[in-house]
Image (cartoon, rainbow, N blue to C red; front, side, top):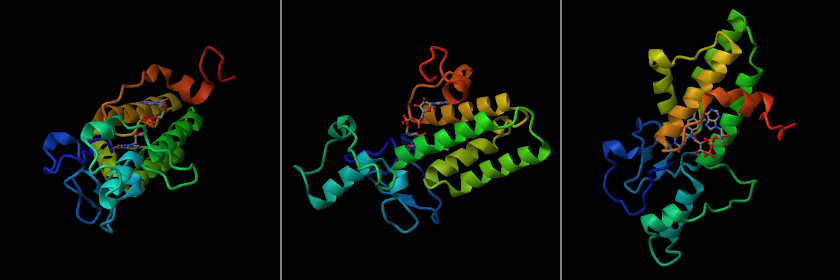
Length: 195
Ligand SMILES: Cc1cc2nc3c(=O)[nH]c(=O)nc-3n(C[C@H](O)[C@H](O)[C@H](O)COP(=O)(O)OP(=O)(O)OC[C@H]3O[C@@H](n4cnc5c(N)ncnc54)[C@H](O)[C@@H]3O)c2cc1C
């Protein structure tokens, strides 16, 4: 999550990027911590930094509530690599899987392969463990101009890049040049560093 601001106890504004939740999925506290359906902080919906700040606030650790600036510039806490993922680690791993799937998708898929992929993407939008990420992804995919392009490997690779860029934009990150998707996810960079 990007917009969690531990100093902001105002309800989220429409432009704040804080997720709006269907009640059965979860909710968001005034300070921007995303809760799961069980009412507890959802680890796969928050960043490790957000969770650490929350924990510090609850336990009174440190010198009181961290300021928004301090929270923003603090290095991400390093959880040991065998801990459950936060929203960022989950995202990186999932994008690796999704782009790798496009890189091995058939050049000319059969109807059945296209249909499998269509179903896979719909199901992903229902089961992805960050509920507001899943909701936004599904809403985006449902717009006619964003429906998955599955006719060829190139179409699918570019579509996935576009989907990823949509999230990059939402998070204020730099967009990726989709002309480079094959080098990044299939062939390796032209300078040979991946060979
Ligand atoms: C479906 C989905 C929805 C998500 N929604 C949210 C959300 O709403 N809020 C939230 O906080 N996080 C969300 N995430 C997680 C988020 O996208 C990032 O994965 C996370 O913030 C970690 O980012 P990162 O900077 O490490 O790189 P990532 O964005 O995870 O990217 C990994 C690598 O992919 C490459 N890359 C980047 N962009 C592209 C592209 N367009 N095409 C091809 N390759 C690319 C780069 O080499 C990059 O290093 C979502 C993840 C997924 C899979």
